[in-house]
Amino acid sequence: MAAAGCGTAGLFTPRLTLAAAPGQARLVVIILRGAMDGLDVVQPLGDPAYRALRPRLAAPQGVIDLDGHFALHPALADLMPLWRAGELGFVHATSTPYRDRRSHFDGQDLLEAGLDSQDASGLRDGWVNRLVASLPGTAPQTVYTVGVERMLLTAGAVPVSSWAPEQRLQLSGQQRRLIEAIYHDDPLFRDSAAVTAARSPPVAAQTSARSATSAGGGSSATK
Figure (tube, rainbow, N blue to C red):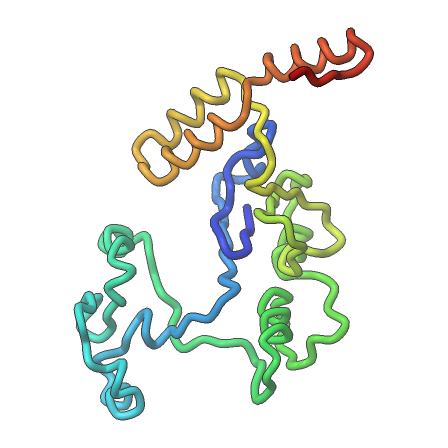
């Protein structure tokens, strides 16, 4: 189980630890911190009211038909293989109870807290943390947040882990080969992992460097 703020959930950390859940299912939660118009992303072109209320959006330009009623924005065409395979769905016309108040931050906190209230004051934990608390056999490695900022989504009494792309991965040769195998058929992840691994020296090299520093009583710089 993993959660990410404005990004995707990572599958490995500096020790190549996978999210450890009691079962085989994995949940990835991506919180988009910006604005996205759901009626533009998945357009209900079959609804007459849509054309009447949103005439500028209801003029299809390259949209991709999904089921004869809804259409996908062309910028998300890369998602179509997942849709055709039955691995992607959209929950439309859904919102939190937050109404008639103009704080984007309060609305976002209510979303992450998972509460049916309009009062965002005093929120201390998120629905993912409460979910993990109800599962048997969990550990801090069951949930990973990706990023450097605290996320209310995973905050709470249950300890969770975090990972940020800025960290330098300490990967052994075996771990590097495992990543290459996992990401081999996905160009996006494969290329990204290759760049990350290239910036991180092998564990043996880092260990040798620390040993040499310790033996010399410190470090020195030479021109």
